[in-house]
Amino acid sequence: MQWEHLSGNKFDQPEIFKWDPAFTEMAAKAVAPLIKLWFRSEVRGLDAFPRTGGALIVCNHSGGVLTPDVLVFAPDFYDHFGYDRPLYTLAHYGVFITPLAGWLGRVGVIHANRKNASQALHSGAVVLVFPGGDYDSFRPTFSQNVIDFNGRTGYVRAAIEAQVPIVPMVSIGGQETQLFLTRGNRLAKSLGLKRIRMEILPLAVGVPFGLTSFFPANLPLPSKIVTEVLEPLDIVARFGGQPEIDEVDSYVRSVMQTALDRLAGERKLPVLG
View (cartoon, helix red, strand yellow):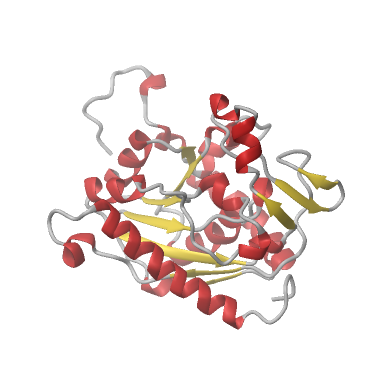
């Protein structure tokens, strides 16, 4: 890859250069058997995924702090396409304030910002984004099957600017790994937490800690998780050369909602699937 604007300083290099395919393969093969055993996870629809080139995967986010979404999807993605096709995941800065921070870049987890998304997509890589972020991953369990990005549409701009398809993807079961009671939007606002970039103060019930917020994080119950990749969206082909951001976003969410409703209809029992 060539980045003409880079200086010779290694610290100026894009985060995407940290991705290590050998380390990613080792990590995926170590984690995948545990994830498949615990969550009985399934990933469907990869045959419809673009075979080459950059693409932006847009998915709902589930499971609170210990979200299993990437751990469910990434091993199957690499099994299908091999470890010479990088998968980058855009993540909130808080994810990097953990003991695992030094490993995240090596497996393709990068800070969620426009620059990183653009560099990854222009390199021809696949990028996974959860537009709803923690707002989505802490949605109440009783409204778990609702696609809600909280009005965030930056992913559409990123795909248009990089001229790559959007690949919608939906996942079900992650919101049953504990009982999510409320996002705590009003409480967070009343406490003025927006000053520190916190818009929610969620409450959830699980094991072993019972009622918690962000921390301590309860261990996820072994809920069956099904993730389904949907048909790629060629934005220009469907919406023309000057697409309306809100129109594209509305369409993507509607396609995802239809698919999530279908998966919910297949689900017979909570947790058991």
